[in-house]
Amino acid sequence: MLKANNLRKAIVIAAAALILASPLAQAMKIRNQNLTQLISDSQTIIHGTVKSVTDGIDAKGVPYTEVTIAVGSSAKGRKLEGEDYTFRQFGLLKPRKFPNGKTLIATRPEGFPEWREGENVVAFMRKPASITGLQTTAGMGQGLFRQVNGDLVNDYRNVGLFEGVEIDDSVLTDEHRNVITQPGAMDAAAFIDLVGKAVDGRWIESGEMK
Image (cartoon, rainbow, N blue to C red; front, top):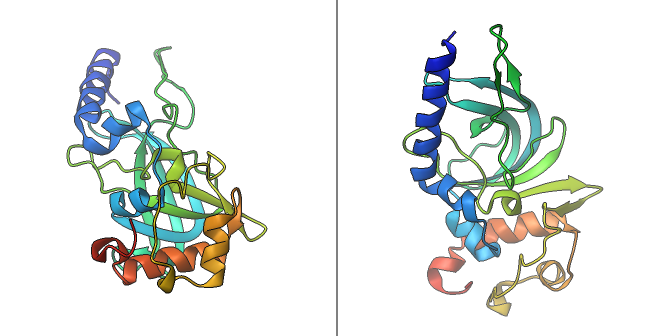
């Protein structure tokens, strides 16, 4: 185990590195992101069940929460159906006390999504940070949707999700239109289908979705 002084030094270095890393720098000033932006900022988009949530401190002294999602379907990135998707997000689940009496208070920063075992989720995952390998969702809490009774909702109750979004009506189904026009919780199957078609059809790249 790292000595207290070395641990504090490692945490300071890690924190500085995280601030410089693009995905986490944006977390310091969370901006509203609509669906077009969430898709564009994601490397991987998956739908599945949170299998495990643990935390720890890596060899460099960086505190993390490790999340494993059993993937049911994936809309962007490598096809992951039937596989486990594991990543590490900055911050511990709770403060950690060491044998020397010191306590490390480096929990999940405000705005970062909270992961809960057993939940069905749709996650818009950013590219891992180049320095630390840590990863989180696009738009922070905006990019994690929890599924309850067949509906999906993010930490912001989906407010602003379709604000400013323009999609060519000819590529939409009635179910897609209902999702776009009805605020609040939305039908999970219709939303997942909308995102999948937008990615597979390259709607953003072709200008069909703005």
